[in-house]
Structures are given as structure tokens and as C-alpha cells.
Length: 71
Image (cartoon, rainbow, N blue to C red):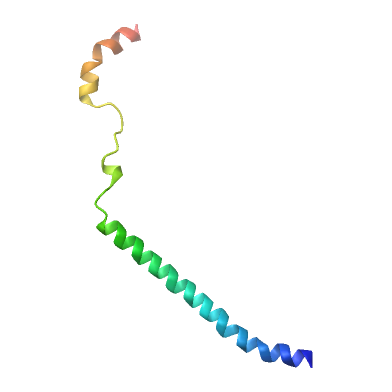
């Protein structure tokens, strides 16, 4: 009797698992499109403003000091 109930309950569990999986897939697709849209509409890009070291003005100002410290 227990086997019959377990086998009969099996098809009821599968649709809920499929619904859960489909829900996760829809959620993941929504997250994907939200992040893409946010990146397209976001005008702040910090990588464009990142200073990668001293520029030519700094080198020009400190050129004498670097020659004195090298000796």
C-alpha cells in the first residue's frame, strides 16, 4: 500500500519541480536583461576616469628630484 501511494505521488512532485526550475530560469533571464539595460543607461564608467599613474605634468615637475635621488 505504501508503494502505491509513493508512486502515485511522484507525478505530483514533478510538475512543481518543473515550475520551480522554470521560475528560476525566468528570474535569471530577467536579471540578465535588467543588468544589461542598467549598463546601457548608466553614464558613469569609473574605468574611464581611473588614473594609471603619474602623468607628463608630474614627471615634468619632478624630473630634477628623480635625477638627484638616483645618484
